[in-house]
Length: 255
Length: 225
Image 1 (tube, rainbow over the protein chains, first blue to last red):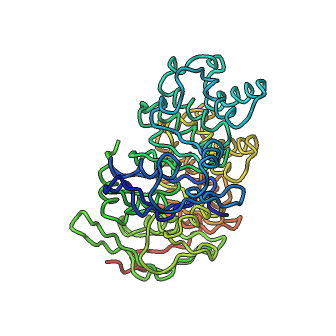
Image 2 (image 1 turned 90 degrees about the horizontal axis):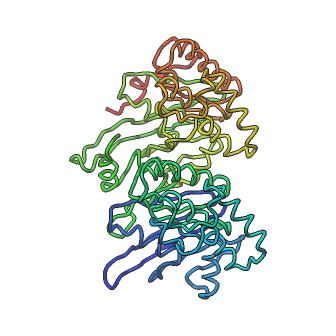
Image 3 (image 1 turned 30 degrees about the horizontal axis):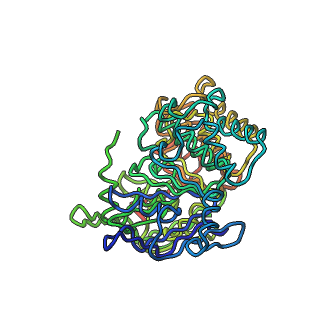
């Protein structure tokens, strides 16, 4: 099996400040990679740099699309935008950043479909209902505005909106960050099921090691813009080798 | 087949004065297909550490671990992920699951990795839950509120729903009454008869005898301290 996404020696600076430095990652189909670290460690800069939200200064991002390797940083802007709409998806911490609040729930889901050329109203409506069902939002809410939704529903709507075009690679920045714990559990369960059913590959940023432990196969631990340790998620959390990872793991409160 | 050759394992605690704790030196072990090996020795001697090294959770500093000739190397996590998906099952002492997920789905999950027929997988999960005396009324509830013995049986169900070639069992019967303990031991024996290589920690001698396990006293074969 070949990696679906491979990041090599990626660097992003803000002036002379390091955003993230010398980052490497391989992501295989069906795999979840967690990125952890304290605030300011460069997690969000990293995920934004590999998903097309930020332009990194140097490095390589290789995306495997139907066995063709695409050099993401060297393709045209229009091809890049097409890839972002079809192969990639980005789930924001705050669903309000990823949704349009002034159009209906159904309209939010159909937007990506229409942007890649779907026009048949009946088919689009069917797809919307299928996705509302998958993310457990009642069909009767299809024409309601997102502003009438709870935080957990908004996050599920954002996930539906992103997955409707069957992207292969999903980026998530603290997807359960603003949610209370009972809603967080539901979202985690949903994400795990979707990863398995759709063979999604996911890069997820979180400061919550428990969330990463439950979702991720592999982990990257960041500090000051660099990866200090990476590997199998269980191994890095159970037998961390780097002093910073040891500190991070031993600082988690036990419930 | 599980093989450990000349394993050295130590922990370095960087934030606690760089303390070095040596666990194993020159540890050798081999578990053949259709065999059960029981690790014995006082607590803290490293019995669970051996299971965790085989499962890829713990790093070792030198030597090699082979599962059916595939090497366990923490530098290649993808290989360990594949081995876990296809070859190695692990029943830990503790149940670690997403809150609010029903028991039946937790038990189905490992089998859904390789079998996509939801109905067939559900039937298999129901069967093993019945075998393990988990009340039907509990199947649609999260196991996090269950008793210790029930949680342990859910863990066992999850580990034994598939026929892994290698099975790692960390005290799978520790909090069970005698009736349920015998049920679990019989399930383990079935896996052995199907040719699994099984290594485990069983706190009571009667279980080890019942399983006809080859006992290995870790304190005698490694020289960590």
